[in-house]
Length: 256
Image (tube, rainbow, N blue to C red):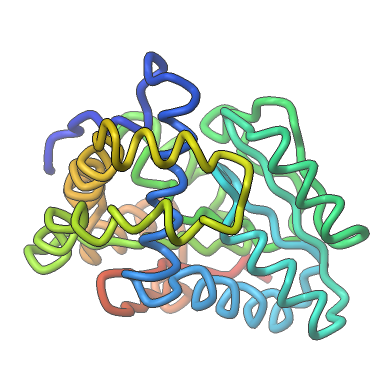
């Protein structure tokens, strides 16, 4: 098992403005350099929710909520009868409230801190999603989280994979990440902090490049996923693992 190295995104000492910029840089990668990971993940989750008859998709560890924002826009455009709930240990309250206002009746945000390693789930009438979040859980806490998830409809998306190709792509990712301030130029909120942390003191792209490589190392291989889920009682035929470029998703359905 690979060592659980630190990621800058997880550090409590990171200034709030820098932490927000790290999320922006990551969001740029997920939308652009990873070929619109969010749209792929949202489309997959919506299809699964409709297939199992779920009425809600709940994203835990939502971060900047790019996945849920994409899914809510998709639901709104298609007039699907589906709700979206978002939560995080460090919720971006202003962002979450803005999303609630943009998607009334579709998206609900929990603005209090929610630690999904302690109490990750609620209802079986939903699809529970982690988007680029599971690898942040320490190895010793993963069994506890998965035990709570086993009876649910679950999709665990990871934007990267533990292989050399994915790690190399993350390592050089600081180069395209320099474009982040221009990508978000139309968003007035945070404009100057993005210029500061990406150009004037350009640490954000380098930190996200480090975090990307570490994220690859933290991810489980396909064999590790299957072994762990089977050990926890998930029926092997119910386990699905799909790869898309650097990304992959692990999913299983709630038992009948």
